[in-house]
Image 1: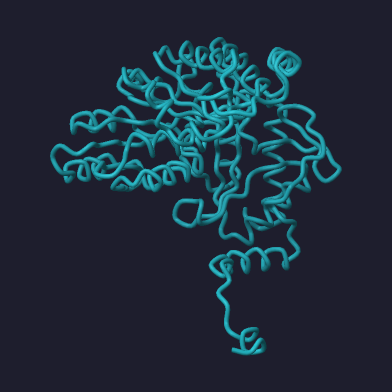
Image 2 (image 1 turned 45 degrees about the vertical axis):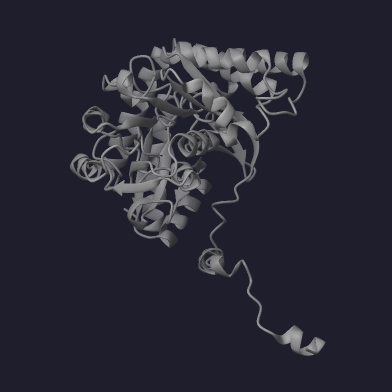
Length: 409
């Protein structure tokens, strides 16, 4: 074959499968809208404000629910660990990557949840990926909510278990699927306390009762409720009185704790073997000492954060009512968490609304298909306990002005 013939032959491009998304993004940017997925925070001033595009902006899309990122004790602990232990461990937890701080943060988690075992991962994504793929493998069955987070789906795929999804928050649908599983098969039900797109909570009390009646173990992801929901901030399972029936709780440090990392807590007597058989734990570097020090300090402070929780609930109720009264369509009828999702007519107008809010001085998350339920476009608001009552009223005014400018209300 000549060189010329070789050069003109059709070639498969591995990026061709992304062309619809490439075209969608190009069309969005061609309309003159600023790229909503490339925002740069030039300077972070506090848990609730930052400089974006040269102007001071209220942050309403950071998951910094309890405002711990600038807590003086948290920052001091991180600085001290940086001085004492250096910038990183350069090793896996099962080799040279376990420092005193890693054991301390796992003990803080055990104390926070009043559970026997805690295992810390380098990210929340890895916590789901690792635990799910390790405990549910070939021949086992995973029954999970169709709206589960990407990390949950990826953990299922990596573990090679049979995956059986059911309609969101549908107790009857979940029960039907459990009853179809062959006798004697391993069964794991995966639920979330708060679903991050709409901000709605799961009926865990009823669902866990059904799961246990059908011989299934239960894993609950409390990423968006830990620190905030429940009398002690342990999440929706605690709030509904069923935490003692949950086999595994997955969580993250990148939300209420205010840093980065993930974890699993459990009372299972054989839990510790996961440290030797869980590949995303064994084959990755451990968290830097400064990160685990900030996390441990934050977690222990969250054990006594009742006033912060009460103020965050007040913020959630105020913002939900303010937006609803002004004609916005919201993801839930009543405030159920620190997340309030505002439903947009389509992606183009959603992006326009996002940009109009940014020009007002407000940052929110633009969430789009396929990450969203029912192909909706959402503006996702994540409140913080450090938002003042005055800031919340300012936010409502910004939404009203932007909404009228774009024609959403």
